[in-house]
Image (tube, protein in one colour):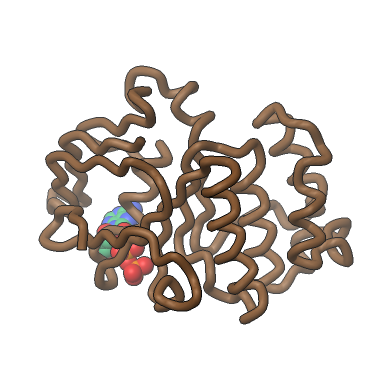
Length: 209
Ligand SMILES: Nc1ncnc2c1ncn2[C@@H]1O[C@H](COP(=O)(O)OP(=O)(O)OP(=O)(O)O)[C@@H](O)[C@H]1O
């Protein structure tokens, strides 16, 4: 369960988000909203990457009061992830293993799924946009966090990888109790997949559609 409690966020004294309370019980949630409505900002706040007024809780654990325990339960894959160009994909994966304290074999099926074995030992500076996107999705899944936040995960992914990713969400949700909070301007969630729950940022607030 993810709860947003009375959060307020603005830039340059202009209020962008004002969300009194909302509770996401669990499952797959899709975040919608026009350009500039605050989706990325909200995701970064929930992931603990941006300061804000108010609080967010995962299963009762407060981001503000128990930040370390909270952060172990959440991961964020950004729209355009930036990784050090001189590191290989596998080095980044091993870094995440150590941070998330999990066994190294965990992501092998994911590397197979996304056909990443042919480039995972190359430096990230040589990757295409889609290859970087796949790496960011794999990194977000490491350690099986309770909530995975994905900001535009389908941008730059090919059609096959998009379909694989949608199936992966459903499988993770069902078998690992992983919860997803996803923004996408593409209308993929209506096709061949349990659509999950839709939310929208409107008039600074977050509401169920
Ligand atoms: N660091 C910042 N400093 C000042 N303004 C910012 C900053 N980050 C975001 N903003 C502003 O906050 C608003 C919301 O931005 P945000 O990126 O959260 O929108 P979004 O809903 O994700 O948009 P899009 O659909 O275009 O990706 C925009 O007006 C943006 O200019």
